[in-house]
Image 1 (tube, one colour):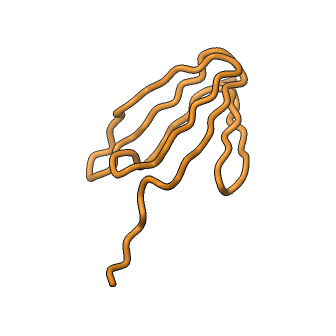
Image 2 (tube, one colour):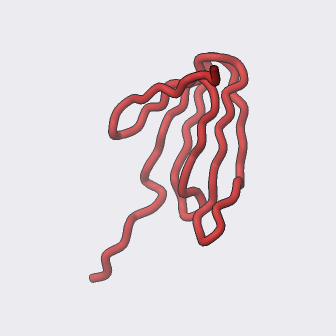
Image 3 (cartoon, helix red, strand yellow):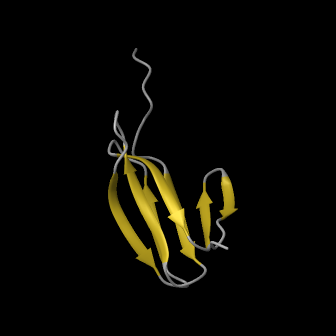
Length: 78
């Protein structure tokens, strides 16, 4: 039996705490690139999933992020 990481099962929820929160999906592979971008306004939610194409998600702005590992807060740029 082959050991594999199962992709596509990891979701996160991002809740914007201010207008203009940017959420950016980054690709997998030897060259990491931006492949998707969303802009959220205060109170909006985005449910994002890690996939075979998405290896990282960058969040810029004041938001709450919920994962299976717990809750974390991003902070606004000072």
